[in-house]
Amino acid sequence: MPADLALVNADIKTMNPHKPFARAVAITGSKIVKVGTNQEVKKLIGDSTQVINLEGKTIVPGLIDTHVHVADFGRCLMWLDLTTAQSIVELQNMVKTKAEQTSAGRWIIGRGWNNNRFKEKRLLNLQDLDAATSNNPVILYHEAAMICAVNSEAMRLAAVTEQTSPPEAGTIDKNPETGKLTGIFRSTATNLIWQVVPEPDIDELTEASALALQKIVEAGITNVHWLVLSEIEFPVIERLYAEGRLLVRVNVVVPEGMMPKATNLQSSNPLLLRVGGVAVYVDGYLDSKTAALFEPYSDEPGNSGKILYAAEALAASVQNVLVAGLQPVIHAMGDKAVDLALKTIEMPHEKTVRFRMEQAALLNQELIQRLMVQDVVVSVQPKVISTEFTVWSATKSLGAQRAKWLHPLKSLLEAGVKVAGGSDCPMEPLNPLLGLQESVLRPSFPEQRLSMEEALRMYTVDGAYCSSEEAIKGSIEEGKLADLTVLSEDPFTVPSDKISTIAISMTIIDGKVAFSRQ
Ligand SMILES: [Zn+2]
Image 1 (tube, rainbow, N blue to C red):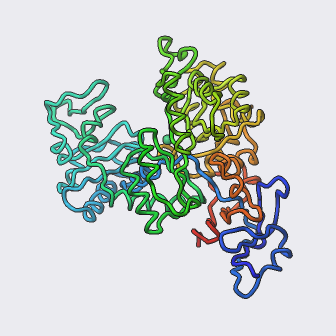
Image 2 (image 1 turned 135 degrees about the vertical axis):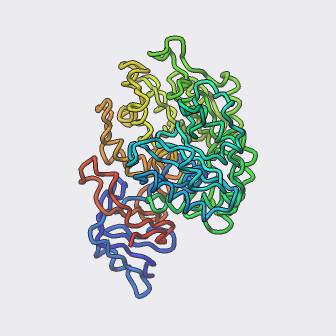
Image 3 (image 1 turned 90 degrees about the vertical axis):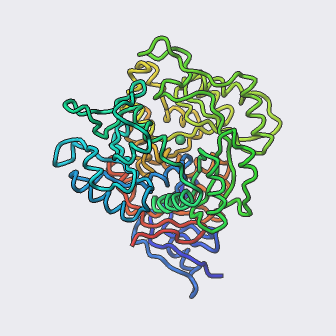
């Protein structure tokens, strides 16, 4: 029987160690039926076969991102993108155009302006934005996110006046001569305005999430782990599924409190939509110094972070997740939290399940060994790791000795621990190739740099392993799902600092071309 689709003249990195390279692949229905030479695949080409000549382009297994906040990403995409504005006049025109497309009274939200780029070389102010629209409240975030500019309508709705005192650590700018408000809010004061911006309704969030899914396909991602943050996302996911608008395979991960809702989520096609995991938080985050450490933060001797669970309560929570037949996704960032999470995992459990630990950021040799013994998948976001070293300056906050053990990806792999990769989009950019690039470049503690092969494993075979789906996806093998990503260039040969600029030529999901760059 002829194949439905044949991709020929390609440079295929299969990620299957038994047959790492191939030139062509044939697909029938949703499955890969042949991986081999052009001649081998040609035998399966018939009159009904769609043949695509890839002219030497690289094919990798469909990329898996194990950490995306899809709905939030969608919300950000609906915002006005001000990163290109070179002048205040240009920014005003962008706001004016948006106001014409937006019904009166609805908020206009934007992000990414920077006064250093403005030819006027000054901050935005109230008058600038009032001139752009008086019908819509406007809030525009600076590139650094801790500053926003608003118009008079936004301040009226937030009931902010010259008499309003800023919250602790926040600033409401005033003209030093007149004492009048300038429309600039800083740090915690930005919340005075943000708190009156209404949450999107189901219709709005559905459209926003659909847009996010389109961007996800265009980024070469065939399978996303959708980390839910709010209950409103359940009807959104259900609607997208029912309307055939889930463009990629979705593995839903929910916070513990939403587990009952999640188990009600209906899907007759678990290959497309499944509820995979339940997130249980053992500690907070390094950047806010709430991750639980054995020894205090180096630059804050009184603070060692905080464990959020008593040992028995954590064990009970994990047990609940197991009873529901779901995967415990244990968020543990500091070494003390990782140790507690491991103690829970090391208890005897009735059901065998593959545990997943989110972050497992600060480790040591002993913790790595225990992760390996328990077959815990560590889920990381490589761009977040570089941000921790640069923006958060991990070496200062942890001391050089401990910082050495912050996200020691190479040591994890050498010990045999499986590591899955993700983006944490929209906190960091979605681009999975940027994640690959950050993993191989790794400027801090270069001994932890990965090879391209190892980095790619995080987004393919080990991404599949993370959700116990390695038998059906993650590598290009006969019998596996036909999820493939075609790249314009070979990430193994381009200079390491150019990996993120490789274009996605095509995304194939379930044997069908889901995206093709013309
Ligand atoms: Zn996240």
